[in-house]
Image 1: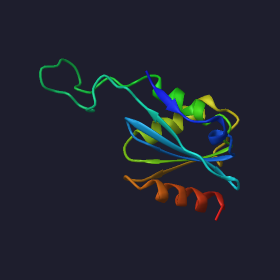
Image 2: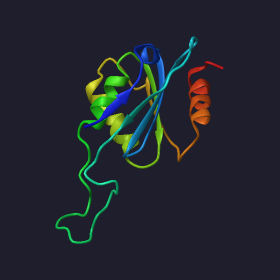
Image 3: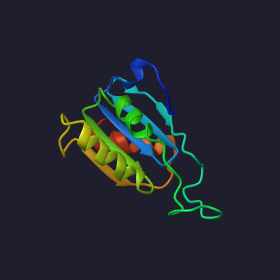
Image 4: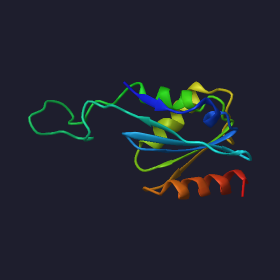
Length: 133
């Protein structure tokens, strides 16, 4: 099961930056009024992406299928979304939003590679991207 913790006032901004990996999504909704924070945790079958010892199959751990829908639900009020993070989860969320949020076009969904920035760096990146400096 995936959990999201947020107050409704935190997510009713027009813009959002999402930092995502296979275990966590940090969502920073932002606007001229301020910045909120929502954290969504995935609960995969294993905390490790690969498990090869004593297993049959490709050796890839099964993912939490409710993770991306929960992240997308947290972004329901946002019109402009920047997705950052390491690995393939960033692209998976981008494709999921393109399929599920037909109200967002290509100019409103952005993805950038990023390792593990601090929360302040993520917020600064969003402010620059959305012109909220």
